Structures are given as C-alpha cells and as structure tokens.
Image (cartoon, rainbow, N blue to C red; front, side, top):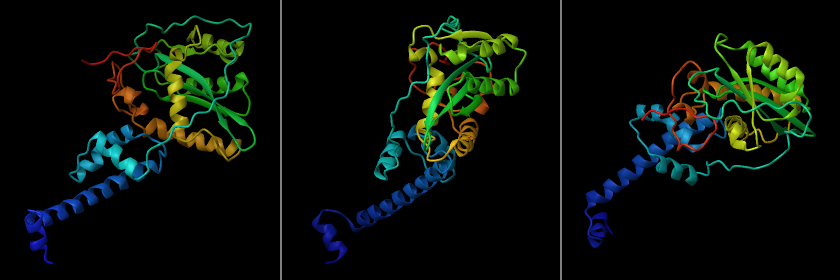
Length: 293
C-alpha cells in the first residue's frame, strides 16, 4: 500500500507524514548535540548535577540554535541513564567533648558581602583501599572557593593547620578583617590552630549547639566534592588520592558554576564584591547574603 492511501485511511495528508519524519530527525539530532556536550562536561566533572549542566550548556547550545528547558534536560538525562544517584555514608570526624576552650558564633546574623570576610572550615572522610583518609578544607563563605586543603591519614590537628597555612599563603585581600568559623572539634580548638588565627588577626567563631546549619557552607562543599567528584571512596592509596583531590579542587574552583554565586565559578566570584544573586530557593542559613529584588 502506498503512503498516500495509508495517510488517507487515518485522515492525514502525505505532507503531514513526512513533516513528522523530519521533526523526529531534527529532535534526534538536537538530542545528540546536547548529549555530546553533556559528556564533554562530565569528562572533567563526572558527577555534576543536571541543574548545573543546564546553566553550563546554555552558551554551547546557543551556537547550534538550540534552546531547552529544565524539564527537557531532566527527561533526556533520565532516558539515557545519566542522572546521578546520591550515596550516603557516615563517619565521625568531630569530637566536641573535650576540655579546650570553645568560642561563640560570630556569624549568626552576619551578612557576607565580600571575599575573605568569613572562612569556614570542616573535615570530611574518604575511604581508601585499606584505611580512611581525612580531608581538611578551608572555604571562603562569599565565593565558595576552596582556599586551603590538606589530606592526611589521621585526624590530628596538623591536617587542619596545613589547610589553614595554605589559605593564609594564598590570601588575596590581607588588609581586610576576616573571621574563621568552624565546628567545635578538638582540631579547631587546639592551641596550635587558635594561635595561628590570633597571630594573623583573624576572629575565631564556632558553632554553638551542633546544628549542621551553623556550618552549612562547609558541609555543602564537602557534599559537592563527594557527590559530584566521586570522593566517597578511593581504590588507591593516600598519595594517588591526594593527586586526585588536587585536580578535583582545581576543577571545582575554576570550572564548576555555583548556584549560590549567581552561577559564577568560585574563582570568578572571588574577584567580586557586593551581594551575589542566589539561584535556589533561600533557606534559613546562619550566614545570610542579601539578594537583588
């Protein structure tokens, strides 16, 4: 039977049939272009989420004359099994039951409006092939840039001190006031750590009641490195994992757009000042950044 007769039986014209075929081919080509760009981004940021991808794809797709929405990209990622599954594991890295002095929370009602106004610190864990490794991070609360880090095979204060020393060496605005905020772990309350902060004129601030929202930015950065950069576990040893972490932090700081910083990368945001627009629904966090109306 001919196409004309079959189309007539269904009340359609032959042109409508071919138009449908052409549109299917166009959609297939569009999806292929999108997926190629997704895979290119994922080659460096293997577990970056779909919302970040949507923002990063806008420029490259515009060159092809392609515009897509969030739901379209979510459906396409789901169809090709490219969505990221979040894994949850837990290890204890904070011991606040110690005799050392604990400090009050200085940033509870503080509006962070410039880089190097507040640094937040935390420790997270990485499971190695035969042991645990512990990653100490110092993050700028305004730009979300990781300014200092250290990876060690123990939970001593030295890892936190090494990360803090790195942050101090790379400081870009040394003449302005700075507050260091952390949990009440023994590493951050240790004399060696506090002495470095005091010597450099940095205010000491700590969480007060164990609520994770009191150090939400540091917790969020930990989660990004683990979920998007696959740092839950490593089949390698300490040295190889350290190399991987160094590369992941480079990509995070320089390539990954951050929804809390108007989709700037942390490195770009670190060169700004003033309020940065948030691209997510605001929640009640202890550090508040003003939003443009």
